[in-house]
Image 1: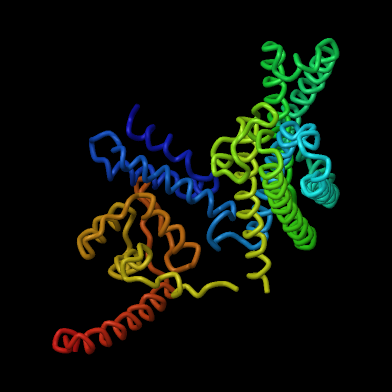
Image 2: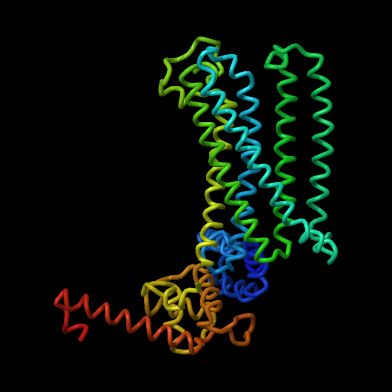
Length: 318
Length: 110
């Protein structure tokens, strides 16, 4: 690969607008810096990092170079992505926590049940806010379609349609199969079913990701008024709060389960477990519980990042 | 609220400050800027840092591009850039004087 082509390839790390403005001179500059030698690794690393940083600046993810509207839109979309992750984490929790109340003594079910109910309520409120957010953007979406914007978003819609068909088929197939299996076979007794379920879980994750991608691509192309963006910003803060509420109530539920039925979290035989409040509960939960916690943790970090970006944009506007 | 350009040039080794100082002696393109900064400040700016600073300064209206010569585009400092550089240099001079007095180096910074 020639130095010029190599420099052009590295340039792709920068956003399109930046490439259009500085691309040619930047390539010439990198050629000057390298002399007759191939582009050094350290130089390549520096360009990649600078390109990513520039993307973050332009998208409004960091710094104050972009407009407040861009910062608010980006913050809101990060919260949306966090919520999509939370939906996956929540679904994983619902599956892992199936029949959890049966593992508890009947006299002490109430606190854990209340915490779990709080998870469900937070999830419902958060989802409702996301739906309202989508509804608020509908007029702008119609305007986008009327002005020939379909070509900009067509591809992601086709990808989503493909995933929805795949999801519908796999849901139907798995349900039909599950009806012919016993409870023991469905819960780990049949290895083939376990594999099929894992693939199904992957299809669900990819479908949620495809739907989120549609929302992000469409929202990026929409011409939203200041008023609509302000509303979306407030809704994003609400969704961010619901994410935190979900995590807080999950922790409460976890603590209750750890106290009353630690074997449930560890996925071991009923009644066989470490002492309640043992530190090993924190480090040796079952794999599904570990995955659930991981997804929820990442979602929370993203939600906090997005919500803080939105909040900062409101503060700077004052 | 928009930041004043001077607020972006708060450190003497800030890449933007180094570029303004370099451009104060005349227009230069990217590679010439890199070499000049290396010479007077002993700092080697990476391409990402250099062009990050150029982007920032151009957005702030402190420098402006000239016509490209063989794909190499020179930049020159604007009137606002000169004003900002003067103001920051004065502020740095004032701080340097205070430091020199307190360190009893008054002879060197008189």
